[in-house]
Length: 172
Image 1 (cartoon, one colour):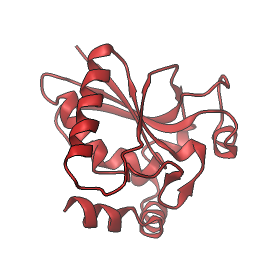
Image 2 (cartoon, rainbow, N blue to C red):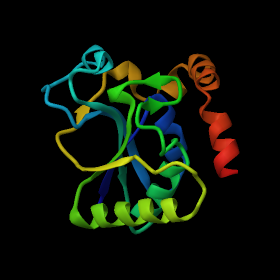
Image 3 (cartoon, rainbow, N blue to C red):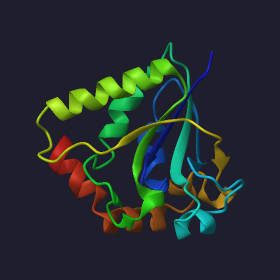
Image 4 (cartoon, one colour):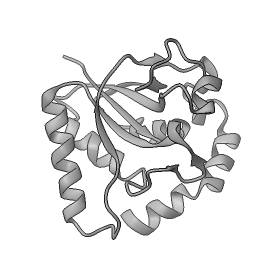
């Protein structure tokens, strides 16, 4: 049985690599979810009026890599206290969210969010939304595996974003 998890953590380019090297992860696809526009393009989503967020859809084997482990990795890639986007990527389409594909995933996501809030790791409230998974729209091909296809551009973008400094400060 293959499970599915969908996370929004700002720019989807930066959300693929952290999940990509684990046994039990079968496929990671960049795309869009949560909005009202059917078959959105990158430009539609970037404008911010489609309602969609940039997401990664992860297909995984839950007998090898659990949903709880995916949640743990997810939280460590984002600023869960920022409701206005993630790092240099601002606006609605770059907000963080967990899209639950089942009631069990919703419960696990809520529990992990509560644990993070209770940990005292952050002084501000955890604002990452937990939402019901909707139709997933795959992003254009040039966005898929961007960190592999365009390593220099990926590295420069990630360095400019401030994401790595945040992760180092709060998670390492």
